Image 1 (cartoon, rainbow, N blue to C red):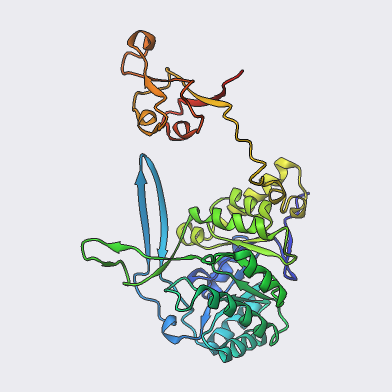
Image 2 (cartoon, rainbow, N blue to C red):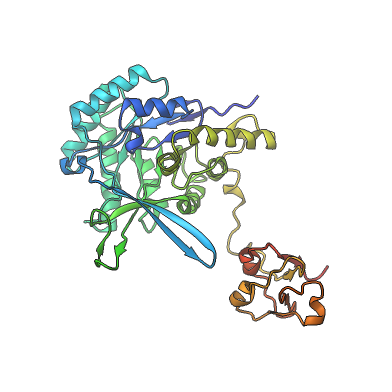
Length: 395
């Protein structure tokens, strides 16, 4: 029988999928929808001490689309900051959520003064929050301190809050650090009960006609499927060193993404952009994707494969650097688009002579000079017809 339950900083979750703090968790009604579609826990949209951040501009979402050589990607660019509630109203929402929801309710706060961190953390604990996430790295604006000062402030604040409350305290780390592992170690040393890895990056987009920043006119957070790889890299580095649980955040869009985070060493994953762009129903698909993986691999519990990939990452000296493969092109599949020749910096790809391309008379096709091919694999990745494969040169 498949068991996807996890223990996250002392919280018992029915599954590892947590809905991250945003407009999708701003009210009890929205949190209920997350629960209805299978979330293991919710993090309430952040309470900010800075009052201006509680007024979110409109519009505040933009999809940035990019294309290159037939490939496409997108970024969810957003300026959604704090909960619109003040402290007392925020506490009431948490209290009501605890009465009406069955899953754990995690509060999130962002403060600008030591007194704010203390009073707000006490407030949400008294309201009944199961844990407290420290939003120490809001992406909606430039850093006003040096990186060293920001990292030190994260550590000092975590220690300060730990001294005030008994519920689990979970710092949400910034991705914009030179050495996240060193910061993570310091946060664990001062008592962090878990870590969220990471908050979104701070970004900027510019309208070249008006020559101004787009949308609201300032910096914004940006996320999307692309962001998973940075978080995976650091979770895999944290996992063998830290003893506290890790929550992977960024880029989760499929059940496979959930599995990747767990294989890297995460205990839970946080999802936000995918719910915003596709609705709460995606939560159930993420959970089903995890269960399908476990069934296929014969796992009964998440702990059986957590961190398995972290122990298989090769070091600099271990990477096999032999060039054993070369590209080959199936002339029956090739449509003569020429992309492979355009991108081959080894100049190993050439037109087939007409006589050799018999049967493909509609167009010219390409072939690879094995002796020049570097085996990099780029042409195979870019071929729109999937006509290129890699073979062992020596077989």
